[in-house]
Image (tube, rainbow, N blue to C red):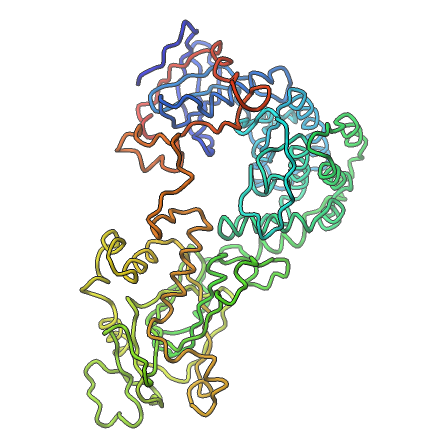
Length: 622
């Protein structure tokens, strides 16, 4: 381990203990300061020595600047070592978020006390022209066990307020990012990162209501769906709730809703009246019976309690069914909307005709329960019918023996159905390979008019699963293959998108040609199955989740700029830290008077103690 020059600073020796938390930049540990025996919280972030503007250095400077208020942590030491930076600070008992998650919503008297302490802390922070920008339950700590004194932590996103240029208010379909933590971020934070004092106050209002209820109207939506759909959905839900509606539906004292409306009414340069609000909160009586858990949200939680038993499967191996790919559900991911939640708001960009799909006849090759995801997966191959000018672009197909051809058809690589299949010139085929879909939890059990026996299902699996040729190439080779279909198939298999489909019964009304109205709603003549629909949805899913969408385009991700320091990791542990990008701190995170230009943070931590770290033989890993 190579220490940075200490410039004559006093060095403290820390013995690293157990990991107690993690964040976007690193991990937090218990540590003991030798000599004093003091227990401290040690933050350790992955960063190269070549990075000049690091995150923990900024956080240490902010906390040091704000020192003197009881809700501001004490910072003891800061240092840089090869590949890491270290910050030693005051150790606390438990965050309020964990208290709610592990127990139950907090009592009204306690939350009123927390509101008073937080308003005092925000007044102190804002008096230094600093905005925290990430007020939430997990960033508020109870100082010691049994105490009601709190401390506000995690100043990594804090910055000094600069001149704010008002921007037009976005509509919910335009909101795809958020600054801070989604559930507690202000409406403004869904648009810009230039936040002000009002935004900390709005986040505090959400936090206090959560502490009382253990939920917010958008709690479920903040945890389900793609990154883009979660952000858009939560923003849309927040727009629906003013303070009055929020407290009425959550059965909470009006003062919490009034705080929310007050925060939203302020202009960007307004200074909140902290003293008046502290007085109002202190004046509230301890009417604990008025605060009851939100019944609607409690029902949601109970509905998604994991059961040890799998429900009965909606389909069986060998059934011939109609399968319609659900492109919008795939892109947005499964949400409560699949169970008929009327409050869910669909992404308007997915309502155009280009996202519409048609049902296709198919044979079920297999059905499997996913105990972790709590859904059934099923694999299928499509059925198509020959007509003039229609053919298959793949040689992998298996004819279906019809009533007329049953007496003289060869049984080599053909299949039969029970009862006999009525349509001539039909075949089963796989474009690239059989498709694997997920059932919606709301999928009803399907009965089949026609079925295929187990031996013929095995034949289909054997013939239609690629064993040679380009489609059988390893993914890393298929991704760069000249044929775009081969590339897209490999990329589809690389994507983590769950492909959802709806299953319905294929009966005679969809088969006989005289019922053209019903028959035309089913795609009998496709020769590419669901391939193009799935590729399009998976590609959009990767984009909406900010995954490595470059696998589809071979483009360079514009978010990786010149500040990226990607060659200072040790090869043996690079994969453990890829999500903690060690880059130069964003220039908006500054303590300079105007929010830009020369920074004060670089020099303001020099008088802190340096750190010698023991018990960290595996520091290159954790």
